[in-house]
Length: 146
Image 1 (cartoon, rainbow, N blue to C red):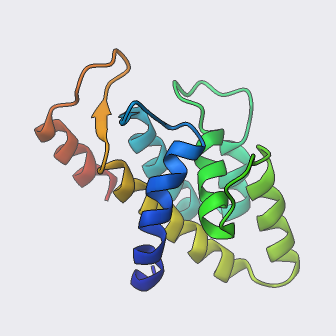
Image 2: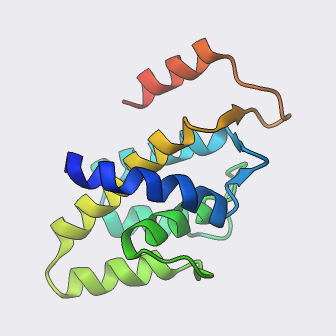
């Protein structure tokens, strides 16, 4: 983790969460918090390419659209504000690996994921029913994900 890069990414993440429609009415579904934490674990346990490929899969049992998280990461890294194709991050990672930049791209993506997790805390986090998440439960989730 490059702390300076995470600090640069946090304000971008805050805006990007709106752009990719993870944030709605200043609220974010708590499931996105769990999904971004799972993504980080997948990178650590597997590979960056397999983690991205799994998260852009259209057939998923996840209760939220994980593709939006991949679009958000891509938008943060590439300073993109327009419409982002669902496979943009996968294509970007593939190209960077071919160039021999696997470690660099992996670190950038991890830092963007951390920034997203931190930026989510700036919004009201709600459950699937639209109810506000209890702050103590939110803290427990943060501790488990770390």
